[in-house]
Image (cartoon, rainbow, N blue to C red):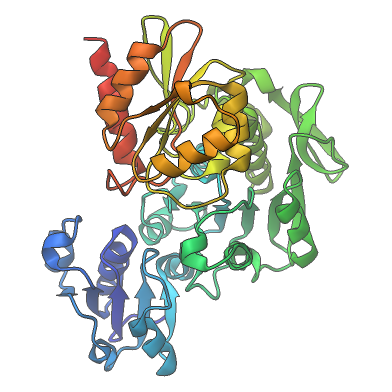
Length: 455
């Protein structure tokens, strides 16, 4: 990708778009940043973008924005189906993503992680593992830090760990991580991609350009990811929580174990992990396997696995109030993720769920709610559908509580009805945009309200 004296159009003023615009300008391009929203509706501070010399255009995105443009960069939140991007394709103007721009700028290998659930935990853990070998290792992407900045800052003789979403792959063509990790594929983002098959195709684009010198780390326990091995171009490294594998990362006699090319390494016991739940055993296996393939030393891998305490908003302990522990799992924005949270506790859960409804099937989720949840507190747009499906699953109506669009009321209800040996879990199984600007804001509001109970 050439920058000097080229004209770039960046579409979408968000974390990725703003970073891509500044980076392209820094590398000598003329840059226009366009967003269909009015400037007053943009939640990001664009003062540094403007100070860098980037031209910013808000509102209607006329085709004239493409006049003279050599390269279009699309932010993840912007679907390629919008008229402006379709017009760019018609004009044969190259269209790509910020993560692909980062890959082209990177002077060190990229280790990329995707999947419906577990990405942030796995990427954070993998980043810590790689920093034991490469002090300047970068960590970015969908985790909230622009990947292009991390790729440049990491420099040579290092690695870059990337969290990759299906949105980021939509406009990518050449992106090629040295180690690609696919954790799982379950129904999500159907509104954006149209159906599950297209969603899976976006995930598979991440390893489509690999060579036999690269690695593809796949979850053996997930049917869709296991099947990806048939389309792999790199070396396949499976991980499994449920089966002892002939080669890969797995659990044997309670130990996280790596067996690869005749070398066997016992890492640590599953109960030595600080992160809770079977899904986090999977995340630890995936991260350890990727780190091993990328050159991390076994003693350091063991050390980090035993000390890693997880990430914010993912079954995060908040406080214990009157003997009842409260957990923030706001990052559970789909039913599969919420199911994994429920599976982390055997019973006696007071669950706060609901929000911006993704309209995914609720049968499996509500079956587990009936089995493990003592009290169900519902919030947001999804409350009515969640209640209907809970009743259809046989969950007792007298244990369903509605809090409207108020997290404060939901926490108040939980506080009033819970007691030992129960635990209160915010695991919404929904996005947050009906009440908050993102799951992070939702989780922090929940934590604020819980800590207020302590006085």
